Image 1 (cartoon, rainbow, N blue to C red):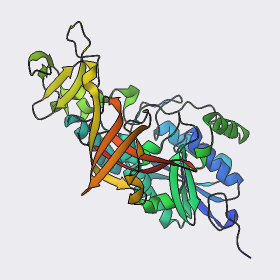
Image 2 (cartoon, one colour; image 1 turned 30 degrees about the vertical axis):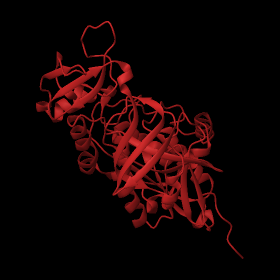
Image 3 (tube, one colour; image 1 turned 180 degrees about the horizontal axis):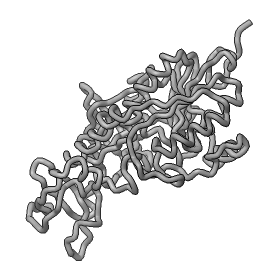
Image 4 (cartoon, one colour; image 1 turned 90 degrees about the vertical axis):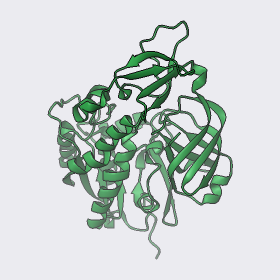
Length: 371
């Protein structure tokens, strides 16, 4: 008699299925652990200690911090599941924090959450889960995954305000086939309701909002601490190349920024370009932020390349809309033609590809914006 497909797409009875749940200490991952336990799976919770920060409170809005580790431990105890803490501070600093700082020094706007998923979360945690002979790695990301014939594809979440597929474009095919995302078909308020029914202590815990190692969103202070030499004065120029002001360091600026330029003009000025080689900021009117062509590097494809030949949609920031586009790729370099105008596209951000099919907006892959 053929075994019935279980809720995570495997031909195994839940009681014979071991899953690792990445538990950050927040309501999403805690709820996922509870759902898996309730459904009869053998659950191992793993929490990552990623950085050292002594200034944490019970109302922390960051993840992977001291208080969050304690919350994850309490949830694991409540659910009566095994719980491990992995100490990845040095790996996190090398793979995420150092990259974040260097990217800003190069005049880019980095996305450390992608780097974190690409390195410690889905590389090292993936390997640890395999070592534990787990059948799947489960996370609380808001991403819809569809598994057919042991192949998993990723889709934008039902709750588009929570969708996190943009941050997962660099997932490998092997990782994706092993990962599961149970919250992709749920709204956030449903997740909290489940947490309350499971009587989890984190049911009303605020969502993490800041980058975990950047307190209160003050990324400049992080760079100042790690690279105090980065703050060198330089010229602010207009589009004609005329010097119209002085800045205190290019790391204080991002493409599209309006505040903080400190130059009085009748027409508002925006940061149009950051030239790290010359330590210059180029400013101009808002219309000069409109771009229709993007060049990409380090492209990751999660689908048959033939799907990329059709008209696709791209997202060029995590909170951005889907933009109808055309894509061509050669030697891992991509050229994207946007079929709609878009403002403030910044090097260092990701450009993520989607295509609509019967299951929703399918994630096809993505790349890093170089210019």
